[in-house]
Structures are given as structure tokens and as C-alpha cells.
Amino acid sequence: MREIKLRGYSVERLCADSQWVEGFGVMTTEYANGTKDYTMFTYYGNYQVYGKSVGQCTGLHDKNGKEIFEGDIVKLEFDGIERIFEVGIETVVREVKSHPSFADKYAKVAITGVVFKWEGFQLFPCVDYQGMSDTERMEIIGNIFENPELLEVAK
Image (cartoon, rainbow, N blue to C red):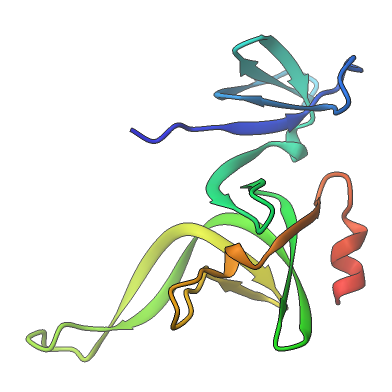
């Protein structure tokens, strides 16, 4: 069974080097005045986190072996060109070639998975002719919660 791992940025100041906490669940509490609190459940206790910071672990690792989370910003240099992507977990509709015995040559399918958002596109991780995944060449350079300006620079 695959472990579901989440990450969020703690509202309270922590004694650790980082404000990020990893857990296994998030509870949203909505108040009558419209405000919300987000509580991250961890093995070490519960922490209030910023809702916009919460992201799920993708199960993928960057070239340095660091886990890639939803909301991370990654850099990929390929053929001398540097590209910056935002990592997401989304459902994307694509047209794919059908099985030869099916009436229609192509079918639309909804695929849910890890996507790399770039210039208005939602791209899936690719594997080259040698079997190497894009993610093995990528490097995490920040995240959309702490470093949104990295995406602005990329435009």
C-alpha cells in the first residue's frame, strides 16, 4: 500500500530549522465568519498550517534524491535550455490512440497524476530513450508558498 504523505507550513514558530511539517492528514475547520483553520496531523502531534501551503508527496525524487511535493518549483535543464515548472497533482483530459479493434481511432481519457505546469501546459513526466525520467534531471529550487517569484521570473 502506498503511503500518503502531506506537507504544510506551520503557522506557529517551530524550534527546528524549517517551518515545514510532514503528516498524514489535514482537517479544515470553517468558522461562521468565513475564516478557516487547517490542522496537519503528524506522528509528533498536530500543527496549524497555512492552507495554501499544503501539498501531497508525489512519490518522485529530484536529481538530488529530495522528495518532490505538490507545490514545489523545479528546474530542468535540457539541450542547453533551462525551464521552470510548478508541480501539481491534477486530472488532465488527453486524446489517445485507441486499440486497433475499437471503432474510433482516438479516445478522450481523463488521467489523474503528477503534472509539471509550464507556459499554460500540464505536462506529464517523460522517459527518454535510455529509460531516464525527466524527474531524475530536475532540481527543486523552491515552492509556490515561499518562492512564488520564481515562477514570475520564468515567464
